[in-house]
Image 1 (cartoon, rainbow over the protein chains, first blue to last red):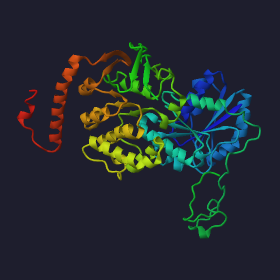
Image 2 (cartoon, helix red, strand yellow):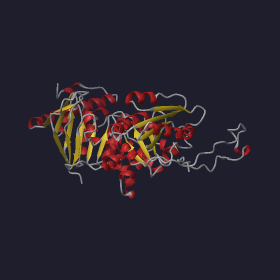
Image 3 (cartoon, rainbow over the protein chains, first blue to last red):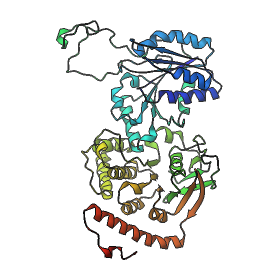
Image 4 (tube, rainbow over the protein chains, first blue to last red):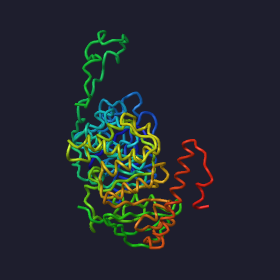
Length: 233
Length: 261
């Protein structure tokens, strides 16, 4: 079974992209299972079950970071998808904290970004983009072609090795390269590791030390100077 | 080297077939797409820009030099031989004009030493088309509709320098259309205008007529229309003059209407 994990900011078009991907995979005779991870509300699982009649699940991360929740539940989800004899497990997750990414080694990492989101977005989303295998750009019909080209260049500047594909997710145009990339992905291995290093899980602020200023803290401290661009490594 | 681009007919929204099965655009052709609002003109140029291969809602296909174009054209926008200027007149890019043009010139040009020159030529071209000149320091989002469109036309012609340029309803943009046509004619490309403007339509070599989503006719501009286009040009120039006077807060005088009244 192959695994594809899809992340991206809210309203970027993840569900619309995955809907067309699912449709194409099913047409190619593949069995698909779908898992949605969100913080507190999602209905994509019902939508996919109704549209395609495929096994779907959802999990709410609640107070847990959705990316961490993904790590927690992914083992069970793979067993579940295998029990349903799926050829492909699609996982849609809200990438929220921008410090870690939900992708795992051995699975395909997709990030969905909207062309309308501004030229600095690629610089802002951190490892959700830089650790992905493929960036899917949606809403391309809403911006000029010149802007599309510059947006793409901004992504390449941040993440030179990430494949970039532009899609019109309304009409399902440009979806084939994503399906081909899923086909080209290896079978998900037994033991999987989160891609890239997780960020610091607990800092002194997390445990309740409320004093302002890094001098009052220990362990991981961050002065205003020496900011580096966080790539999730 | 691109010598021709071909459009193979598909069908309209309701399934009615395109009545023209193939159109071959040659370098240097100036073409108009005409038809009522909602007749599928924008869809047609979107098909071309996407290199449709039976995979768009119209089922149309696009060939380059008679064969299916390489995937590179679709996968890498900087290698795309088609530049599309949409009806969107507002930019979403939160960048200064200079940085936007520099970035675009960098990805479109193989020679980094020419970027500054490309940027200044693009700006000069755009400023021939607008009333209020664009300055490089202003942000893209601050440009007016006319300035945006002028900048996009200049960008497509100078920065992209693609062999094929698609322009969606430039007449609505508040730019100097006749100057734009003059400047564009200096470049040997295929220009395809979606237009409601008789002047642009009659200055085209031929026009594609659309109805209810489908292509119904291909009309070559004939001798009578070419003669007619001179008068149409005069009427249009007069309208431009009137428009300009109104803009400048001047009063109109009766004799200006004399030529057509």
